[in-house]
Length: 392
Picture 1 (spheres, rainbow, N blue to C red):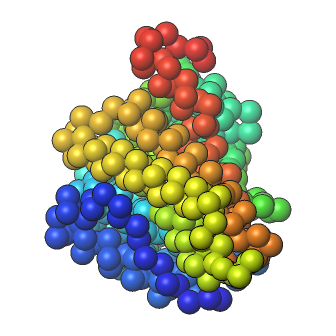
Picture 2: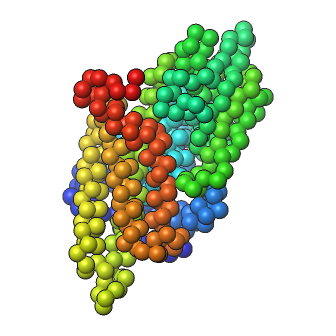
Picture 3: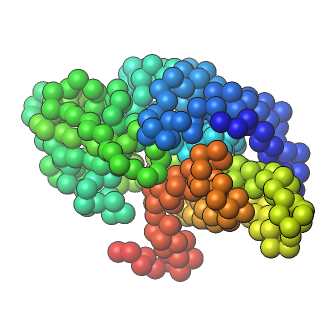
């Protein structure tokens, strides 16, 4: 493994807009990634294993529930701090950031926002500390972009609910302690249920043979007549808007995270362009290579400005679903383009594990699809500006 010499680009001096706390949080996360993630991540990606030993470190830097209040074990940070943490963690690896996104935005957030005080006290501290890891069950084998068509359901059996169905493409599933599962009641209304490992009939088979997110554990959530206690129903919000609200938070984190992956590819390509000599000079001196680098830093800078403003709106409670969709779609697409151009600049070396670019590229092929596909986010923007939904 090559030493992690990453230096973050800041072409428009955005650091001047950050508070001291923002920079402290970002730098602490960056240092942790350099120390605990970069030296091992290529090996774990090659082995297709999740490095479970980093869970405690993620908890210690506050990556689980950064914006959850401290009384429940969270870090009590603002949304820009959360974004910067996701940026730095995805700079290390998208799969590691996925673990944090799921834990924070898709498990801790709905329990905090839609749960009652007893549920918050029972689950959030253990999730924040990394003692427990969680999963989010929304996507089904036949329902991805149309989650409202889900068939997973539960029935009121008097003293408990009986849950049946299956979810797939679930991050953290193989080792999750709890899962926030979205299912329809007998009237067809969507509700969230907290399902705990050990409940009879609840299994989590792992998904194998992935080319992407190889250092992240993915699996299914299968429910075969699972008895769920009634106190495990999230009482404060129901309907499709409830899981979609969680996805807004996760997509916001992805918009920041993708910048981290792009930064790493750009920094690697820039460094390589100054070291690699062809035709008696560094390749960074050739026009086509400078074109690639100039376009990379331009797109990264635009994405930084987009997410910073979105973070301000998020802090003020004014960020809309459509605004978050635009940032997620733009930034992931930007990162994929940069990864592909950076891979070309490194030539054959770009496909090896000696450099992080091919791993980022493969990871981003999942990121561009999950939490809303590239095309669906385009249609969300289209609906927002025209008022006419194209996907219903």
